[in-house]
Image (cartoon, rainbow, N blue to C red; front, side):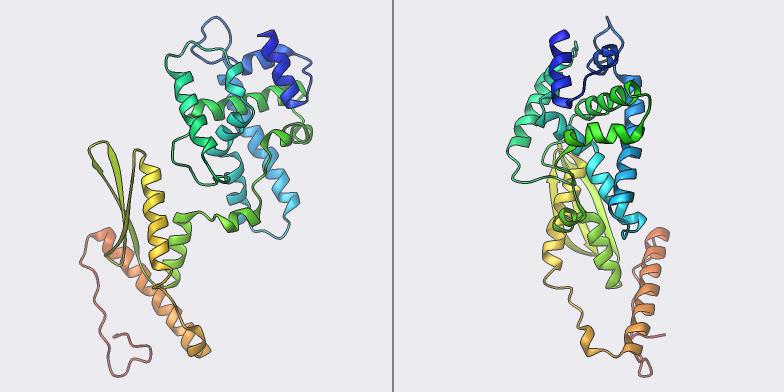
Length: 291
C-alpha cells in the first residue's frame, strides 16, 4: 500500500497530510481487513459535483441552468469518471478480494482504447461503477485532507479530469435522446421509444407519430436505446425539413400553437391508450387542420 500511496500522490500531484485517507480511498469493500472507500465515495460524489458546478457557473456566465447541467453531467458522469480512472491506471492501486473484478475492468479498459474520441453519452460497453467510485473516493480523500476547501479541491483535482468537456464539444456530440425529442417536438410529432428483449439482446425501437423509424440492439438497454435514437436521427435528418421562409409571421405563430396542441393531444392519447387522433382538412381552416 505504501508504494500505491506514493504512486497516486504523484498522479494527483498532491502530498497528503493524512495518508490514511488515501489508503481508505484505495480500498474496495471486498477487502475486509481495512476500511473501504464507501464513505469517502459518498462524500466525493457530492463534493466533486459541487466543485464542478462552481467551475461551470463561473466559466460560462451566459449559459442557462439546463445547459450548465448538461456540461456538468458530461464531465462527472459514471462513464466519464470511469474513463478518467482508466486513463491514469488507478485500478491497479486498489486492494480488493473481488473475484472477476480485475477482468471486468480490463475488458472495459481495452474497449476504451478502441474509442476514436471522447464519449459524452455512453460507449459500446457499460463502465464498471467501481472505476467511477475510485475517482470519487480520491476526490473526497483530497477534500477532507484540505479541510473541506472546494476551491482548492478543484485546483488539485481538475488536472485529473482533463480533458474537460466544453460546450463546444457537446455541440459536436449532443445528447441523442434529448435531440430527438426536441426536433420532433418542434415539428409537432410524438416520439415513443419501446424496449424488448431477444434472448440476451436488448432491442430498442423508435416510433414517431406511431410510425416505425429505427431500431438498435446491444447487451445493454441504455446502449440499445442510444443506437436506435442515433439511427432515427440520421434517418429523420433528411425527411423532417420545414421551409420557414415560405410562411408569414402570423402563419408561423399560429402553426406552432397548433403543433403544440397536437403534441399534447398525442401524449394524452398515448397515456389513455386511445387511438391515434386523425386530422381532417376543412375549407375554412387557415392552416390545413380541421377544428
